[in-house]
Structures are given as C-alpha cells and as structure tokens.
Amino acid sequence: ASALDGNRPVYAPLLDWLAREHVPTIDVTPDLVAEAARSDISAVIKDHYRPLGNHIVAQSLARQLPGLIAGTCGQVLAS
Image (cartoon, rainbow, N blue to C red):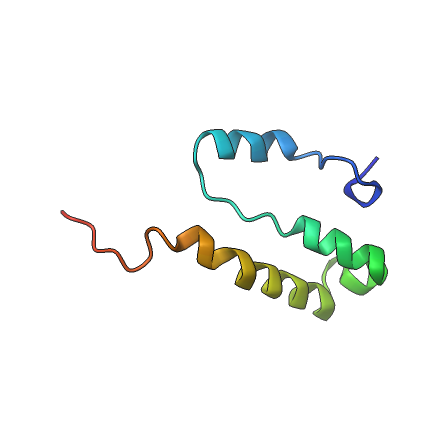
C-alpha cells in the first residue's frame, strides 16, 4: 500500500500533528504522485528528483507558498 495506490502516506500522522500544532507545512507528495501516475515514477524520481520531479516541486511550491506566507510575509514584528 502506497500513495501511488491512493492510500494515506505513511507520514500522515506527522502531517496531522503539524496541522494540530498550527505548523505551516507544504506536502508536495500528492503532486509528485499525480505526475508519477501520468508519466511514470522513473520520470519523476530515481535516487533523487529528476528534472521533471524538480519542475513538479517548483510548481507545487509556487502554487502553495503564497497562501502559506500571506498572513506574515512582509509584516514587521515588534521587538
């Protein structure tokens, strides 16, 4: 059973805990899994991300990061 099979990832309890603790987290795995299902796992990763895997991660971060930091980015913290 794996994420490629549509199952929850083995690290899901960690993501659940991070969410409960309000720790901002970006999980790029669903995007990588979706691309691996379309292309092939070896097109996305082999020992480390391949160029396609890097592209998927960059797209995922570009899509998710602005919403994650919108509330705090650019704010000056009082000392």
